[in-house]
Amino acid sequence: MGNWFVNNWFSAIIISVWMGLNIFLFVWFYFVYEQGETFYYTRHLLGSALAWARAPAAVLNFNCMLILLPVCRNLLSLLRGSFVRCSRTMRKQLDKNLTFHKLVAYMIALMTAVHMIAHLLNVEWLNNSRQGVYDNLSTALSNLEDDTDDSDHRTTYLNPIRKNDIDPQQIPTYFVFTSIAGLTGVIITLALILIITSSMEVIRRNYFEVFWYTHHLFIIFFAGLVIHGIGYIVRRQNKESYKEHNPLFCQNRTEDWGKIPECPIPQFEGGPAQTWWYVIGPMVIYLCERLLRFIRYMQNVQYRKIVMRPSKVLELQLVKKGFKMDVGQYVFLNCPAISQLEWHPFTMTSAPEEDFFSVHIRSAGDWTDKLIDIMQKLPEGAQGPKMGVDGPFGTASEDVFDYEVSMLVGAGIGVTPFASILKSIWYKFKDNDPNLKTRKIYFYWLCRETHAFEWFADLLKAQEKEMEERGMGDFLTYKLFLTGWDQSHVNYVMVNVDRETDVVTGLKQKTHYGRPNWDKEFEQVRKENPTSVVGMFLCGPEALGKVLEKKCGKYSDVDPRKTKFYFNKENF
Image 1 (tube, rainbow, N blue to C red):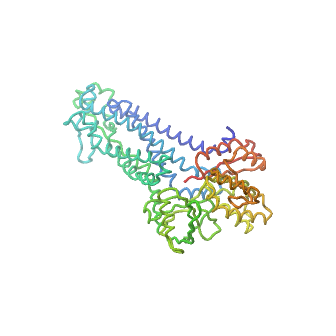
Image 2: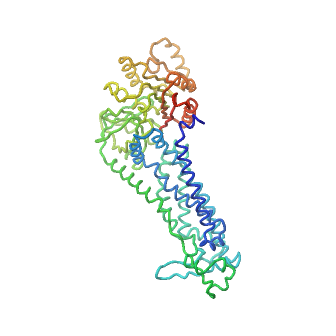
């Protein structure tokens, strides 16, 4: 528990506060509607389903206020910059923005289900009361006429089901699809179902376009959400009426309503729509985000170089006026020649010291395949199609130089943020940067095929040479792991086993075959750095992230004077 606490204590506090607020809102509003005096007659018609519908609605409003904030990347970058002087623990929370976004989405889905089921029961019970199925009081309340005063246009009935001249079995369906609350409820529920189902990992990874376009149904979701409450479906006795008409005294005297001064005809009103109070702020912030993206999209981007690397990896070197970046950051790219609406995130592989920024794009779907195809057909030296660039945005890798010792783990194309880091280190050594705190880097790269190593090997060769010339051969320890090979490759390695350099990469460090023994690697790092704070940085699959996070907890020492591992993962 102590080791886990080192990496996760602040996250646990944030989740606990968020969950505590959800529970508080649910319980508070549950008792408001379950015990509120002005809802006495409403509860008689609906029972506890009233509270079970309204309490989730309050939680929904709260979480709909939060759901957009974790995807406001410019806001997060601004906060990350503001937290530069704060502890790394606070900055790490900003790298878990998508995790929090998903948690909030799950809460919205759960509360929507409870809210919807409760209201479906409410509609059925309101219809039964309107048909006189229940007791005299329910019938009397449902038959109250609308004494609307033309001067203020306020309705005074209780039962919102006013239609009574069609088949009683059809009334609930008619009400759901003709009332503002019912129709918008159906629309936003369908939108939510499509958004959540298309967000599953298998859809997002293999059919990104489906995920991208259905996620933009959030516009319909929020529009329907704001309108949803203006139908005044949930009604209560207004305060003036409650003072004159006490339900506890008058509930059994329905025949005397309006005939005796103690029991005037009760007057009811709908509660004000509240959702917009919660969501207007985040919606304005998000609109500003999209406006900023549009402004950046309109800015001119020039191609400095277009290179086709092995394993269908496209390198784009781009130049944009006023563009400034830090190590490990990423940008969103939009190519109108492929799609006007799609924006895809790519980590930059260039260093901040360079006068351009570059991205390496692996063939991994329709969009990337089309982009690679366009670039391959370009004449030599020609400019590529118009490219919109939004960013840069901060990631966990920005903090790499805040640690004395760093472990960098990349899987496949996930090596890209570490290309930026290693290039920047090369420049810092070249310029004798006195602010470089890092004294040791362990770099691990896992790939399925040999060709994937080729485009990155040149950078590692330059690093090897630079470190040897400066007598700092121990500064960078790197291990390349090949996780997939065939028999012909095995035969080739056996024939060339005595070569001084690796047969795959040409580097002095030989390639390892199979997956790393992470217990052995962590034990070695801890042994070589007995009193250091070690930053573990991963750009790779979620499954590997879970393994490495557990190892960070396992090998961190509770003693503050000994080795601690802090886990950081790239999230897009």
